[in-house]
Image (cartoon, rainbow, N blue to C red):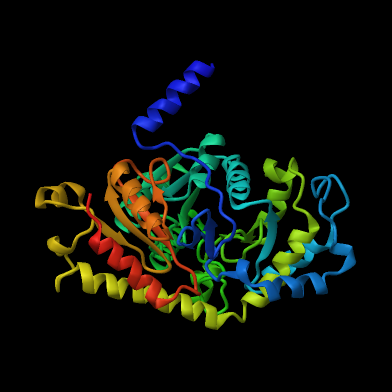
Length: 415
């Protein structure tokens, strides 16, 4: 077995697809042996991990009944700590006629809820091709009948609906609200329109939307794009995770009461997992109450994201939005450019510079690190083969001069 594993690892190394763990000391400005490094890898979009006053306020205010560092069992087996219900009630109160159920992580939630939904007879799942691995894993582990439609392609999704609507009692459409790797938003209104159209035909169509990268960071109150646009009532399952902009741990599903009760009884991951420590759940509730009013932080995040795209366009793109060959990073020839098909993607605070080859992404990441900027290379299986990229994850406290420095390094990079 060890020999087989060695062969697998060597193959990953040869394909520039080998992963290692990196140790840093902080989230906003990482620290290594050479000093501070600007961190463009974290999902801490509001930079809450650097807010020492906020942490101290929580520690000073925590109720003794929530001061437990382990729940010691699943919520079903032992008496449920009240903090779970308080968090769920608070989140549910922000949505019309919805309830909430907390899980240990976004991955834990998706594989648990989807494996439960798969047990419903004659159900098919139609999933965006770029949906998170936890969604795909939940479907595969549950042996679901599922099809994948081209990313954000409503026409492709409609073709699948036409093909399968008459054959199934239930159709579940799955997408992310803000995609973690391409940084673009799902066409929520179009998805809802499709759902409503087929429901008028007597079909039971449900929407399952993962808001991991938008909760906290998007919307007037930080409750995601769907809620901000008044569309949340039309989405059957909204998935919030707490480990990114919320800067905590865990996740929850916002759904109708009947689905919550169903998951309590049928989601094996929920039933058979020790619940989160109450102190962490208390911190999540504390942060959510603060997040609602962090509008200036969300405004700064939006502004720095727009500034990046604006300045990137001024340096690298012509009036038609096409790359200026002479200004392109990484490239020494026109043929190299044509082969690489470099593209920039991202509608919000996640920006991807897609380079193609693993080696190009790794080398550019190393160049940036040598200049004090950590922007990780993202490779297969996180993204499709031959779409390796730098994923630039912005936060609200990044300064404009830091963005300009990054872009100048990109412009001057050649290998």
